[in-house]
Image 1: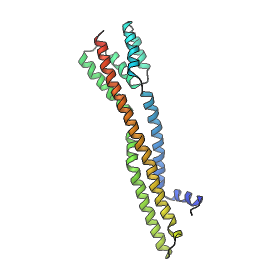
Image 2 (image 1 turned 180 degrees about the vertical axis):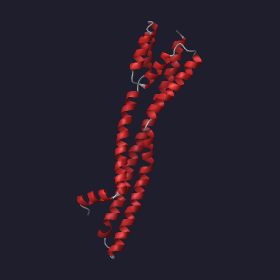
Image 3 (image 1 turned 45 degrees about the horizontal axis):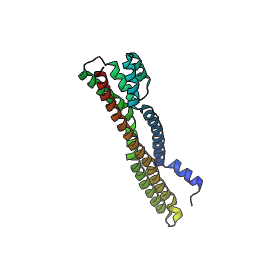
Image 4 (image 1 turned 45 degrees about the vertical axis):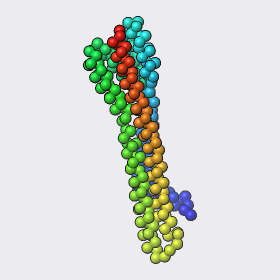
Length: 205
């Protein structure tokens, strides 16, 4: 049996486990940061356009711009950009809205590559730690000149902990990455729909 002190020593001495610990910190940090950013970027395009349409009917174009500009959602920023350039020809406005949607999507996808990368490489880091642990176990066995589970226990334990550590880092990273990418896709569709409806609204004034 490995005591608590043995586990602490193993964590301290294993370079692989230190790397996985650092990866875990990065994982949690970017999960929280992206969750907060994507949460703020969410918004109902229909609700925003309803207010905008009301302002435009009352002839309050500047009030409509200010309302959208203060709205934190990605859809609100796209609509604001469209209102800001509403006087331009329809073709130019369409291209400007498309560029703004790309800009907002880039903001949403920022740092998601880190989560995807951690999800891909963490199992391999854990596998490397497993190999290192097995090598240590056989080295200890060779140096001791005898058998017995106590001789190889530390190396085997390090190997198993490294495998588990890699999975602990990778599985949440992959799940959260896919979840955030789905959210980004949903917001992107909402931005595109809002852009089309805005152009129709402006064209019908």
